[in-house]
Image (cartoon, rainbow, N blue to C red; front, side, top):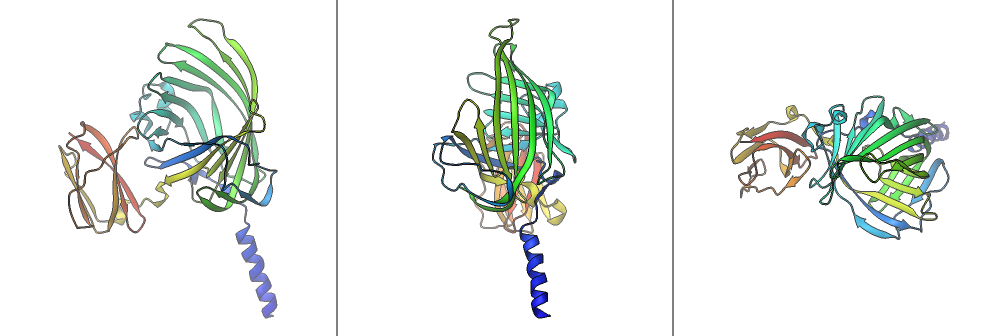
Amino acid sequence: MKKFTLLIVSIIAAISVFSQPVLTSSINLTIGDTYQYNGYQEVTNIEPGEGGANLTWDFSNINGNFYTGIGAICVDPSTTPFADSVAVAAANICTSPVGGIGPYQYYDNDNSSQNLIAMGFMAESGNSFSTYTNVLTACEFPFTYNDSFDDTWELMTYNINDGYYNMRDSAFMTVEADAYGTITTPLGVFSNTLRVKTTTIDYSWMRFEAGGDWIPLGSFTDIEYKWFAPNIKVPVMFIQEMEWMPNSYSVRYLADYDFTTGIKDNADYHLEIFPNPTTDRVSIKTDELIDRISIYTLNGHQLNVVNSQSSQSHQKIINLSSYPKGVYLIEIGFEDGGIVIERIIKQ
């Protein structure tokens, strides 16, 4: 009887360990989420491999041209540089580059899907804005091993500096959850991850002057693999294979993240932030031990925080006197792992 009981326990444990992961709307990003990817170009020493169940991938060592990525913070779309766009008005979350220079991605996410509806790009030499005239559905929920769906999308890109639309794209996309297992990235080991394979056939056009003819650039096929780990809202790994770069991959891995899955409501703490609005300094008092404090502008730029000299872990004073008037996000991290994000107004 004891052997039989042990066998049942072992089977249950095995089912638990190798259960198929499921993507749900819990991976939708919310205001205050931050993450950063680092990456490699022209990678030749890895192989995504075939799909299947209970697989193991080891991408701990990658050879290629390394680069450090731009961090992203999730913000209210209405606070971004492209807020006057009709497309942006329909978005409920924006991933904004930390520092304000780089890509802005606008999503309309809900309990059934993640939908990319617009993209902006701020650069020192030129800005652009792209609208999905046919929305790109990045994921449907729930989504698990062997699930798949097809999607079509269309994109128009407006060159803000030159004042005209200069790029068009029309694409057919197949998204399939083709594998699950354990992956090792340069950040660490992640178990029970779901791999999502996206195959895109993209037809592109370009024009070189306002009112000019659209010049077809032909069709291009690329395949992107994404690995999703439990309790992490974005993929821990990307591997992209592009038709014009045979036998070479573009790789990105999650290098740092801080998601609001750990955020507690203010009701969980006795927390006071005053005065708010403020003209220069704001005091923070709480019954929990404060580990760190970060201040962000609403477009994602992290500020240098100036704390008062205090030995008290339950009270801090933040000096905002050198910053312009406006609304800021204050992120308070506690030693118990919880996070609270509030808005403060500088007058």
